[in-house]
Length: 161
Image: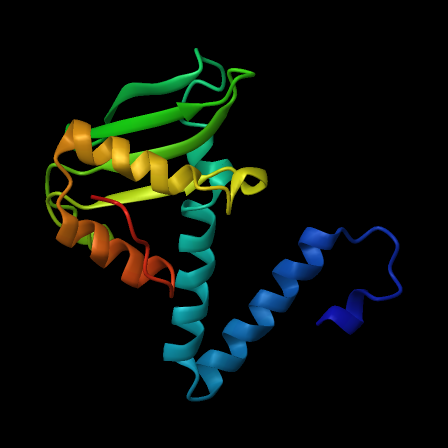
């Protein structure tokens, strides 16, 4: 499909991507690729859902430096404990969402948490410090912390106690 648009100046990049995806769907339906294609689309959805930009836009972008609590309320009325980290310029640089309830649709168990760090602040110990603070405030267990690191990173993080 992409080649069909190659020489047409009025076709946007989004239209080309859409046409390519439609072609992939047709190929998946015609062949034995449905499971693979579904996994691919789910990956794209979750990559976008859990991107820094998509998460950060839900919170105040400016606040006093340090850790700030934010109560997130989901559509099902469950409350998420959100711990936000702001830098010296009062910019949001990290988010910890702690779930004191089950979310089977996202495979989240009671007590689980997720961390998001602004891309330019990664690999600087921000997540580690945020998790330590979350442990103090929300009682996140060492087992949950170990599980988080086993899933999200191949290295073992020490000194979280």
